[in-house]
Image (tube, rainbow, N blue to C red; front, side):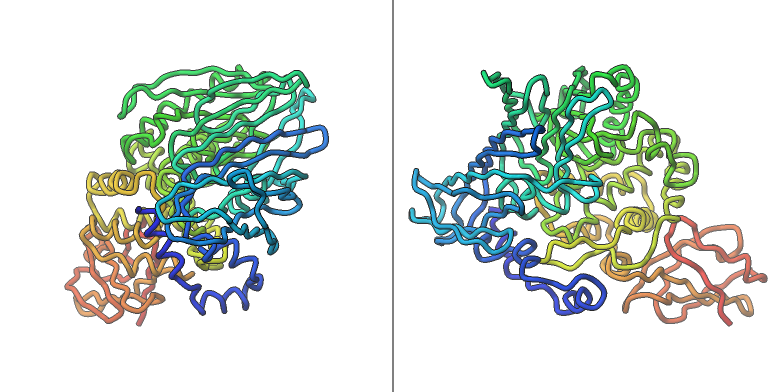
Amino acid sequence: MRRALLLAALFACALPAAAQDALLEGGAPLTRADTLRGSITPQRAWWDVTYYDIDVAVSPADSSIRGTVGVTYRVLAPAQELQLDLQEPLVLDRVEQNGEALTVRRDGNAYFVTLRAPQRAGALMTLTAHYHGLPRVARNAPWDGGFVWTQDADGNPWVATAVQGLGASAWWPTKDTQADEPDSQRVAITVPDPMVNVSNGRLRSTTPHRDGTTTYEWFVANPINNYDVAVNAGTYAHFSDTRAGEDGPLTLDFWPLTRNLAAAEVQFQQVRPVVECFERWFGPYPWYEDGLKLVETPHLGMEHQSAVAYGNGYQNGYRGRDLSGTGLGLQWDFIIVHELAHEWWGNNITSADIADMWVHESFGNYAEAIYTECQQGEAAGAQYVRGVRNGIQNDSPVQGPFGVNREGSGDMYNKGGNMLHTIRQIVGDTEQWRGILRGLNITFRHRVVTGREVQDYISEHAGVDLSRVFEQYLTTTQVPVLEYRVAGGTLWYRWANVVQGFDMPVRATADGTTFTMLHPTEGWQATPTTLTDPAAFRVDENFYVTARQVD
């Protein structure tokens, strides 16, 4: 019922005219295809997907796939037409329900299926889509999305999918929106021998065939983002471990290429302390029933739920570099830390629209600082998050336009992480802040949310109205400026370069040595000071703001 209400709410929301104008002026023009892909159309709103059954044969020899997808859904309201999505150049051969072929009309990558059987509210129904073809090839995965067809260093075929943003419909027919997740999912992938396929969840069966192929059947017992569902097929080795976690024994499975087994046995030891840190800060790992896997991939990495893609070359940092410039990021493997963080932020809590991808990436970025804090203390974590400010561009807003399948700025990472670090300073109490992060993952466990819901939860549990703070950092490119002047034993201060009504508290020196919390607004305020040299005034560097002396 919760998902049904969310779908109805999203359907009721129109794309703001300002967002449309911004795209038309500063980005690619909006098209009908954008709306069909990114909005809750009438043909999406009336049904709630409950189960996907994927059965796909993957052929590295000609870079093709062929398969069927069973779609089980709950009828929310009577309707006759249903939207499925499948991206070119794949071909939808037919759609069936109750053994009957259904009429399908196509509009770009959206297929509208006319249903014959009565679709009564509350009923569970299933249809089956048959398809084949050459899926889009990812030339620079994971950034461009699609299928990766390559070979490992020994010349063995190596295949993987990475479709975040692009969408799962790049390789299978689906209701391609983050707003609706199945309650569970079967993923059966057939590959040529001796390849092994590793997908999400638990391996239920391995079935060899006379034609020299084998089907690997995986089952996901929990809700899952459809872009997280993955093919990873190659010459894999396997080793495992078990960790005593907050919710009991947690299985850890590792699937490196056979040639990299020794390196993986060393590097993947980092998984245990990362999970321990994140369980303490964010709550229990969300997928105990499905376990936790790391799978080596021919691309850098992706947060594929319970089957995290790893391609960082068994080295610390981000491909051996520290993105913070502090040296702290070389103490751990970036892909292990960042992508595991998404099991909580992005997979457990999923944004309904990718315009709110900051819910995934801002917290994922901030989790890097949290892990640094777990390793080396609070000061080191704060130093790391301040260091990544060097990567902030402030070229466009973090929050994207809604309803058109477009993300906001890449600043959702570094700027978003600094926004959260700033809010932590406002909260002022480490345990209260940790409680907020854990509370988010408990309250919205296995849920699809709007960014507004996350904002409201943080404000409520911080005891401070943070709406203007979120508006400032998510919807503008302006960095708040604390203007100040010192005269006659008085410190005058106010906010500038901010949204209307911005009233974020900030810690600063009023005497040159002690930091105290000030409560600026857009109007000038005053407080006594012992400062005689205005240059001695400083703002706590943990707030992502600037200070400017004015006359």
